[in-house]
Image (cartoon, rainbow, N blue to C red; front, side, top):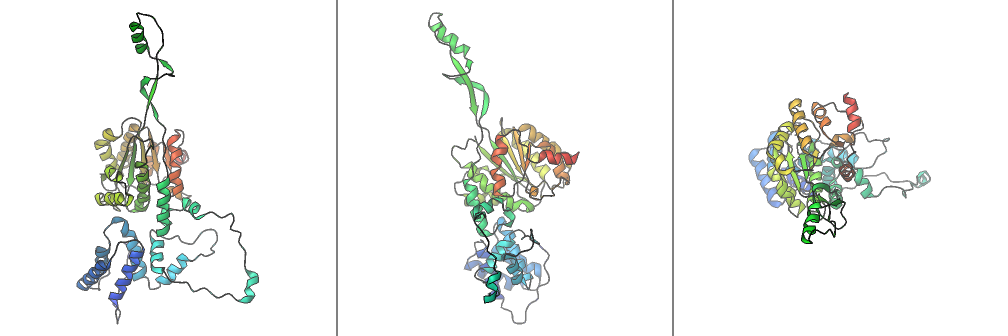
Amino acid sequence: MANLPDLELPENPKLTHNITHFARALRKAGLPIGPGRVIDAIRAVEAAGFTDKYDFYWTLHACFVNRPEHRAVFAQIFRLYWRDPRYMEHMMAMMLPAIRGVQEERKAQSAEKRAAEALLEGVEPDLPEQEENEEEFLIEVDASQTMSNEERLRTLDFEQMSTAEIAQAKRMLARLRLPVKPIPSRRTRAARHGHEIDWRRTMRSTMRRGGELHDIALKKRRHRWPNLIVLCDISGSMSQYSRMVLHFLHAVANEKGAGWAKVHAFTFGTRLTNITRHMQTRDVDQALAAAGSEAQDWEGGTRIGDCLHAFNRDWSRRVMGQGAVVLLITDGLDRGDPEALSKEMERLHLSARRLIWLNPLLRWDGFAPKAQGIRAMLPHVDAFRAGHSVQTLEDLAEAISRTDDSGDKDRLMAMLD
């Protein structure tokens, strides 16, 4: 939680009205808050008091937040509503378009845009009236070549999306497909137009005909479908990205005829959690809610090396099989032993047919492998790609189908030399 200044009790407080308005803003931002919770929050604040900033924050937090994904939204709305006395001006500046050169001065933080939308719903900005003699100075803009809303969302960072944009992005992710090519097996099967002679079947047929050779039996190789293994970081810095990736993963796991033999999903932060069975639930909201309740370390710390060790020890032989494709979604910011992390990454790489690392930090143009965790992991992946938008998840199909696709790995490996 961000540092909060002391909250002073006003001379003529309207605390009940303010808490009710605060709860209404939370509900507009997506939190399931009804009248019962509002009454409980008022009674809880009455019992706990209004003199300590941390007590007040966590009292309301205990009454209004019951899911890990709601923590960031609650924190931002609390900061804007209770902390900043000029929060309305701040949010107006955030929501209104402004010309500030090529790039804005500061992008909205995690869930900050959704918090602003919830608090500003129904509030019209005060715009200066246009005078008659100013009409000649109007600039006409040709919008015929501008991108559609859906096209813009394809490249928009998940962290910068509003509530409505996240809902639309989830619908886009539900339509995505992740096709995979079958893998030729060593086993063969009989085929009329095969490419190899099946000598065993040919000789058996010849013996049944008294030693006369009538037909030459043919065979061809069987094909099998690989498993998809997803290891998703759900630490504090990765929570929003992980939630969107898991939404995409749910669509892949429930797609009929996708080609994958089975999709296995694991989350990790401070510990490893298998959420594969939750991804098989048809309703995506119910599936993610069940996965979030089981992964108790959501938005916690990160122990990548320890979690990969647990996977290699307990799950690798059971789910990897032959030809499995592994997706590793993490920013690589680990404070553990880099040598142990490198060893576990090497073992994971050797067990997989292809190991693809999705890192949302690649959205920054000046990204460089400076963190010790990234330096330890990078040499042991086949492809290193960004994972911060719908577009980057669409590009996964190309990374999986092409064995020569390494993404940005080669460029970043040159920096390590």
